[in-house]
Amino acid sequence: MSTYSLRIPDDLMEEAKKLAARNDTSLNQFFLAAIAERVGTERTKRVFERMAAKADEQTFQAILNRVPAAPIPPSDALPE
Image (cartoon, rainbow, N blue to C red; front, side, top):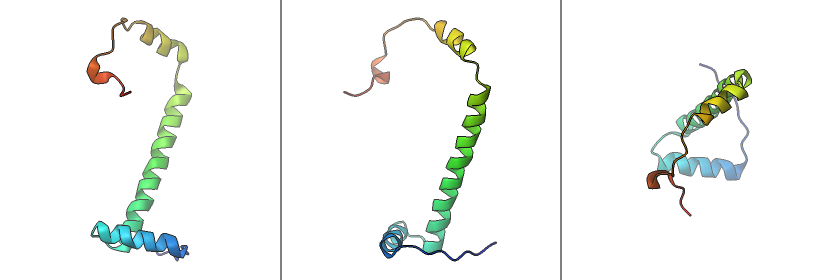
């Protein structure tokens, strides 16, 4: 386990304290969760970037061309 001294603007710290209290968690746990979420987001982004780099646009288009034309089911329609 590591420790790190963090300088946080007062207004951001107050908001973090309120959110931690609202979620019935310690400030430390709140910060850990926020950091873990961001790290996970960045890891996922890198995975998708690697996958996209391997993508073959012609193969993708060929797969899409096999999908029959059909009306969009109401359950899949976007709200207006």
